[in-house]
Structures are given as C-alpha cells and as structure tokens.
Image 1 (cartoon, helix red, strand yellow):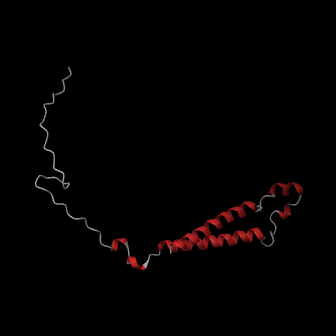
Image 2: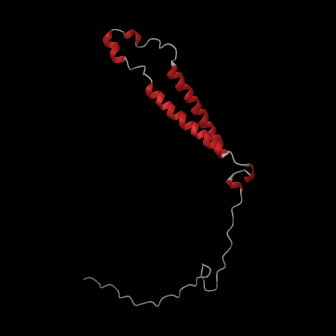
Image 3: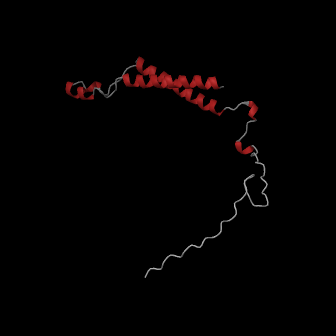
Length: 130
C-alpha cells in the first residue's frame, strides 16, 4: 500500500510542476490589449480565439491528472489494512495503566520515599514602613 502512495505522490508532483511550466509558457488572452488599441485591430481583441492549441490542451490534461492523483491520495490515505480491525478510534477500548500502590508513607512514585517536612525556620517578619 505504501508503494502506491509513493507512486501517486510522485506523479502528482510531476504533473504539478508540468502544469506550472505550461501555464507560465502560455500567451495570455489579454496580452495584446495595448497593441490592439493603437494598431486599429480592436475587433480582434474580443473575437473568437479559435480552437485550443497544444499548450492549453496539455494544461487541461495535466490538471485532470493532478485532480485524479489528489483523489487517489485522499482515498489511499484513508484506507486501513484489514488486520487492524477497522472502526473508529473511539470504538476501541482505551489501554489501562496498572494501578500504582501507594505505600503507607504516602509516596506516589514506587521506590521513592517521601522526604520528611523540613523544620520550619523562623522567618523574620518584614519591617513595617513608617
């Protein structure tokens, strides 16, 4: 299962990089706007763009592959092996820790004896300010 997750992740990263490169190479639709107003060809500014060229089709194919890889990664990350029993984490019983016995001295950590309380030293009271 881990090998499929790795393969799909590599394919997704490669298609993402290819899609970024293809988008950066393409010529924008509004790139000729400044030239079209000055040259008298303003009718072609909003005219038909014609059929999709190779770059736009390649970008659409890369976007489709990227989307399918994203769905596959979401599915593969949620699939659990059959030997774990499945179900929710909340359905499983919480592991219980063994109860620690408290010695008569009151120590909470086994093997550590509590220290006897220190003799209270006389702390001088702060001097009253006048």
